[in-house]
Image 1 (cartoon, rainbow, N blue to C red):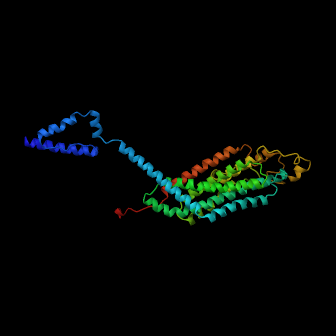
Image 2 (cartoon, rainbow, N blue to C red):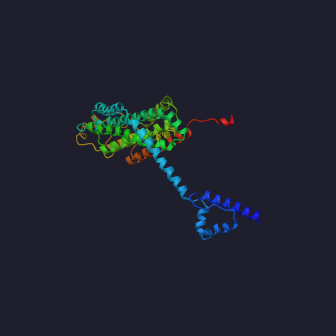
Image 3 (cartoon, rainbow, N blue to C red):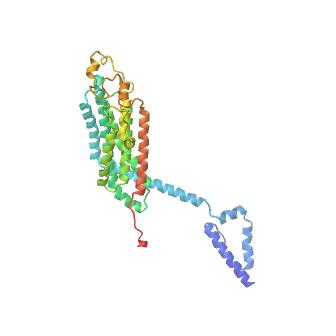
Length: 372
C-alpha cells in the first residue's frame, strides 16, 4: 500500500507539472502524498466541465495570435523606421534638391528654346518633326536623370543594407517598399515640374494633365529599373557600369525612327524583347500618340503653298495630311495612349519584382565554419 501511494503521488506530480506547462496562469493546487488528501484534492477537479478541462490540457490559440500580432506590429515599426531613414536621406541635402529642381526648369526652357517651331502661333505642319523630337528628348532626359540618381543612392546603401540584413534587422521586402515610398514621390515631383514648365513654354497640343501623368509614370518606371539594377550589384561603380549600357540600349531601341517603319522587314526577336523592356519606348509612343491623334491642320496650313513648303522634305513625315497620318507613317496607326500607359505600369511592377528577387538572392554568401 505504501508503494502504491508513493506511485500515485509521483503520477499526480507529473500530471500537475504537465498542467502547469499548458496553462501557466492556472492555480492548480500542488499534489500531496496522503491518500485521503489526494481524494479531497481530486474532488474539486471532478466538478470541472469537460470543456474546461480540455481547454486547460491543450495550449490555447490566443498566445499564438498574440505572437503573430506582435510580429506584425514589429514589422510596421521596422517599415516606419526604414521609411523615415530613406526619406531623411533624400531630403537632408537641400542643395542637391535645389539643383535638381533648377535643372528641371532650365532643361525644359532649353528644349523649348531649341524647338522654336512648337508654338501656338506657328504652323502645325512646320512643327511636326520638332514636336516628335521635343517629346523624345524630354523623355530621354528625365529617364536618365531618374535612373542615374537611383543607381547612385541605391548602390551606396548596398553594403549597409547587407550588414543589417545579416543581423536580421529587416527583410528585403520591407527595405524595398520603404525605398519606393521615399524616393518615387520626390523623383515624380521633378518630372512634374519639368512637364509643367515644358507645357507652359511650348505650344504642345497634349493637355497639361496628360503630359504630367506620362512623365511621372515614366519616372516611376526608370526608378524601378534603377532598383532592379542596383539590387544585383554591390557598389556604385558596378551599378553605373551596368546601368549606363542598359539605358543606352533602351534609348536606341525606344526612339521612334524618323524614316518610318518598314512592315516588310520586321525586327528580330531579340530587338522586340529589348523594346518591350524599354520605358523610353512606351513613354515616347504614349506622348506622340496623345499629341498627334486627331490633329487637323488649320486653314493657314491648308493653303496652296503653306502645306507643301512647311512639311518635312524626307522621311515618314513628308506629305502627311493630318495627325492620324503622321501616326500611321510612324508605325503608330493603331496605337492607343491608354495601352502605352498600361505597358509602363506593368513594366514598373516587373522591375520592382526583379528588385525584390535581386535583394533576396543576390546578397553575400557565407561559409559554415562548422564544416571547416
